[in-house]
Amino acid sequence: MRIDVVTLFPEMVEAVCGHSIVKRAREAAIVEVNAVPLRDFAEGRHRITDDTPCGGGGGMVMKVEPVARALDALCADGAPRRVVLTCPQGRSFTQEVAREYAAERHLVIVCGHYEGVDERVREHLVDDEVSIGDYVLTGGELPALVIVDAVVRLLPGALGDAAAPHKDSFSDGLLEHPQYTRPRSYRGWDVPEALFSGHHAAIEQWRRWHRLRRTRERRPDLWARFERTPADEALVDAPEPMAPS
Ligand code: ADE
Image (cartoon, rainbow, N blue to C red; front, side, top):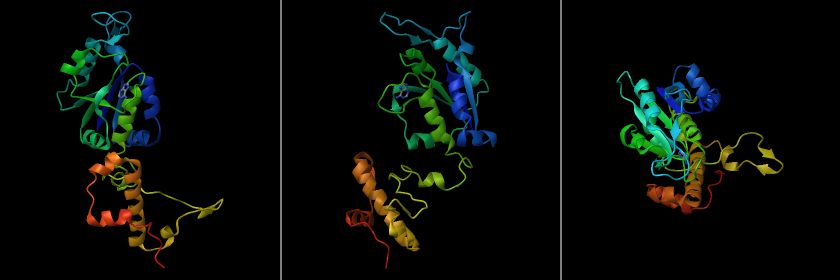
């Protein structure tokens, strides 16, 4: 997969994508991530990428021409690609959207400018507008990096454990169960007995109970949408499963 991030701050993108899973996925040629400097597509000696708003008022607005030229250059091969603009007005970025993007061969993310983007970018140049949450950031770079991270880890081979993305919170509509590792007891804080029973089915039951309970308690929005089986209904109201004796 190829991901181009069109940005005023390419160093920010490079810095983050040079670490951890994204770095390894790039090295393994699972993904190509390019930080594309928007300024390279701006005209004039000063390479200006924003201007004052038509009709007056404060703030600056990201100009349409540099974005259009950048997209023309990135999409010159005519191959299918998905162009996404990061902005607080966009649809919510969720695990489902991450999966959608991970299925693309070429994703272009345009980092919006916090004060505004010429509406013609939205109307004519991008396929999708996404927001990473109901808060306003100073620019689209952090949202773009959130998207890159969430998408890259879904690409086959990006994570060591091939099954891992399927076990994530949200992949089936439930939050994850608690995880523990050694030591078995620390400062009197014990790992639950149920995890040492050696009974696979009992451990799965314990995990499912925690996933159901956590989702019901912490995320009523997910809980309302989650399709519960009769067994789930019974389990979630039962006491915490213990280790079989
Ligand atoms: N730009 C500024 N805030 C944003 C947000 N919450 N999501 C996406 N892009 C943004």
